Length: 261
Length: 261
Image (tube, rainbow over all chains, first blue to last red; front, side, top):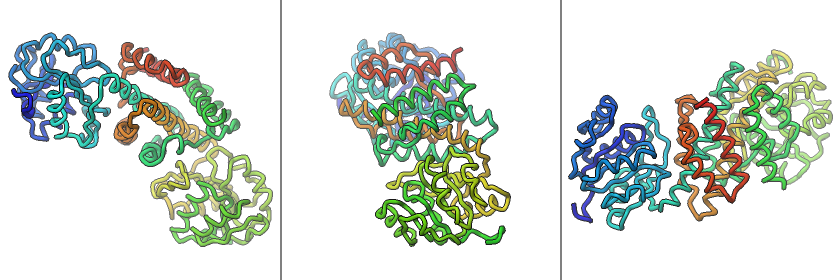
């Protein structure tokens, strides 16, 4: 494969959320998917069926003269997978927000192809607007990954490993931790037989607002107002939930400090 | 006014976010807005102009024979306002998530008209889907408030004071605290000259997902996986932000406990 060739054929190691998300998006964009590898035959076959690829459960069956191999497995397995595909002739990328580019430096040409989105197989979001963070072992590789990325996303960005790690940390804050807050509210309302759906318009509006107004400017609520009376009332309602109460106290203190110190 | 009459004329005490939100929605739905009261002449006039009402800055100028008076002021001023409008002949409601119905029991007919949404004057959301929590001092009043509410919202619910307070507490969790998390991410990215907009698709998807999947089922991330390596990496990135680090630790511990104990 020449340095400036387009990436036309792709294999994927993994069959989980990210493998399925990226595989489906590339397939829809007309890229040929060659192999899907998973130790689990059924998982490999399920994704292979979706993207018209050949499922393999033995990694040595991976076709070596493919343009790109995407390693979409848990972070701690990336290095070991890379060791097992040393004869692969194309570019090798991983899809992790956390692992540095260098984890693949046993390859000739390698990179990162990290979609900044939360994916579950039951709900694969459209890739169009998903930021796709690209890094390559050399300029030619970066360019090829960028042009592949642009087939599935309008938002391809070059990020170095330390920037990507930092971005991933903030993604954990806005995604994992917000979802935990939703879950706390869900648990509390369910306990009283109340309907979590009442909160959905508020959840949506809170998320949409920051598309237009800086979060510090759209902050509202008792802690922002330093309304001790309401805060105490809420803490009394959380009396039987010491863990949730701790979270309520810490976040309220943080807000009071931010807006009143 | 007869018990079963429709509410046709409304005055509003207050000119802030909630007063503006409710006033604009009722006016658009064809309700006549009579007076807007604010101590601040300019604020009273601004909202009065929007809803074709008469601005007043002296509360004794409030027209007494109006069907409904909506007290949309900070929680701690509701009781004092209610004292000052004892001659008002219609229904008196407040718009607070926290204050009990009884704070207005010096009135003959009274209630609560609480829109469960975050409003700022610069961004008044459409009322159609906003849950409107109604409570009345008697069945006739509840019914009249309900039928007024249904002119502006498809989601009018009868809630007693303790249910409303509980719901409000969960609203603080999903709205105020999620927004604080967005703000933390914003601050962290800005510091590195990185673009907060990269997180917007993730923020939107996180909020949309819980319309379809229970939050406990859509939880992902390093703490859920008990991925100590990534957690430690993130904590090292937060080394210069001890307050944010505390939040990261507490929420991660909560997730680890929830999914691994």
